[in-house]
Image 1: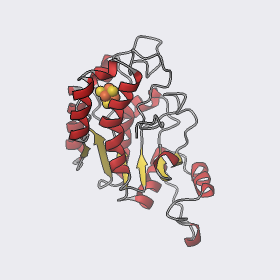
Image 2: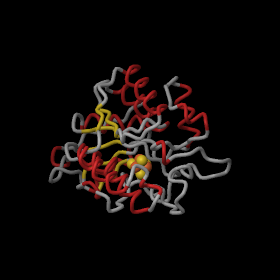
Image 3: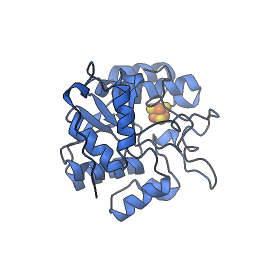
Image 4: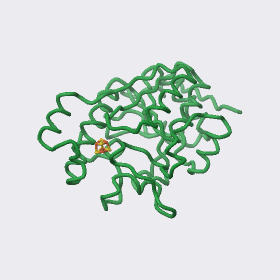
Length: 255
Ligand code: SF4
């Protein structure tokens, strides 16, 4: 594998603590493979760089690549308290296989207690507002708590997942999170490419993928999809909103 090594002249390095738009454009042109993108990110941003992993197929593929580049690269996850057992299983399998010091972020206990006291345990089925409230408290707030400590974060986004993600690039300035760097190394991969990488590298994966779940979130909010349905149709299946986002990658006002 040929890795592209880019060394910025000193005056081209951090601009006011961030990369310039020109630098980001050049990187998106120069860095072709996910491994090149990840190597650049780790070389330039570690240890203030973290992979946000929900341990879906895209994420375990990226973790495998990261561990082959630098076994000390940081991985964090958001334990909402409502995940499937299969998700906890694959977390431990990956953690053990790569000897990862997995950083687990939990929701604020007081926020969860207040939310369920007022709205009940299954509030997300009652209204879009309640669903976004729950995603905000169980996912977005813990994510933000981690992101304010970092200069860059890595995601498993792919362009064909949602309309919102269709225009995303490999490397972006994340305006939603204070202009930090957002790295999407497999943004232009297909679902089949992702599965091929997992199989050919013998990577543990969430067993729900074998049961019709291409996209996996919390247990009460995710179902298997039917043949021909969009990949994220099983997320919040009772909602008609096409966006199918929780607020981690789109501003839903639940920060
Ligand atoms: S996916 Fe469902 S259970 Fe999980 S945080 Fe969002 S609304 Fe709450």
